[in-house]
Length: 279
Ligand SMILES: [Zn+2]
Image 1: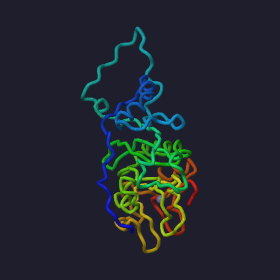
Image 2: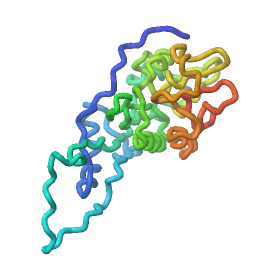
Image 3: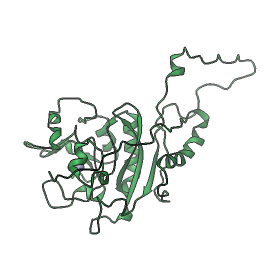
Image 4: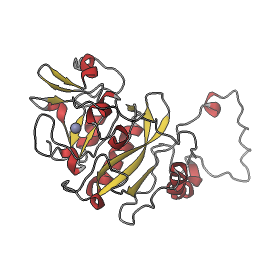
């Protein structure tokens, strides 16, 4: 453990300013999605022209309506009443995403000159995720530009599956301290650092690896469990919220874009780790 204390992590903000996109308005709302998201996040960097993914909706109700158009002879539909369980049940907001440029200043704790990817080759991927509290949040993953679109699609799948993620913040909010980020169960990607237990660059240094809910999906090498607070989750027969198991929605979402899971390695087993290279 390298020690060090993180700055107080903040939960992802922008939880409530959501606009639902349903029916014929969906195209217009989706078109505004990025603007809405940027508004939530404050004065951030403008999106790059190469990375804009646009907002997506995971809501199955999007698309053409199944209700036939009303004719002159059709009776008007009954008004919705509050007694209807479907009329009052709020739908989760649609998935949204944006891909933005990053700066060396913004990554001051995770990037430095000499890292294998220039800062211009990295992107901040903002996505909606499903929180442990059962509501939608906005998180950020810093990844290599070349994989930003696929990472967006993976996170869209996880949101659609309502897979719970506790928090999703750049490791810079933890001073670049991977141990602190793991202990906070923070899902993160880029961090220019050596591979755990070695001296070569970790795949995280290339922005091509993501650790998902690392507290409940620890790194296990014999008797060594990282983070140590995740020892209780080394027993993979459990099914606590946010845990990853072979063949589940998370493993399949990553596999569909060519990413593989460290939970299948012979040793160590890295249950939090997904990478494009398989390392
Ligand atoms: Zn990892």
